[in-house]
Length: 128
Image (cartoon, rainbow, N blue to C red; front, side, top):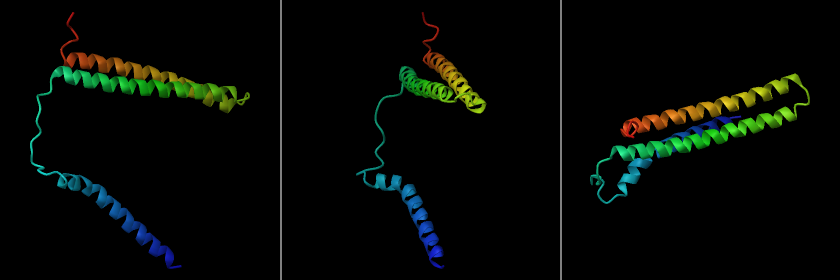
């Protein structure tokens, strides 16, 4: 009966050890550097570089969001086909399709907003 308490103590020790290890990894990584106080070198970040990064991130997130929305729409369509006339299942499938379409619209709207913000930041939005 006392074995359960022993296992709980081992689990707690394991959790604490893993947490400490995760917190110490950055310190250990810096210890591997020959001179960790060397300042970073390079040029200043330009507005065009910021616009490029925002554009890359926006495109990636839009792609992931649209793929997820299409998966939800397909999943809802398949669930609707297999509902067999059951009212609860058809309602759930229709809601899933509707949510997929709304999700795709929101993702595309956010993409347009991000592209506009990136253009405003780089001051290239109003250039002809």
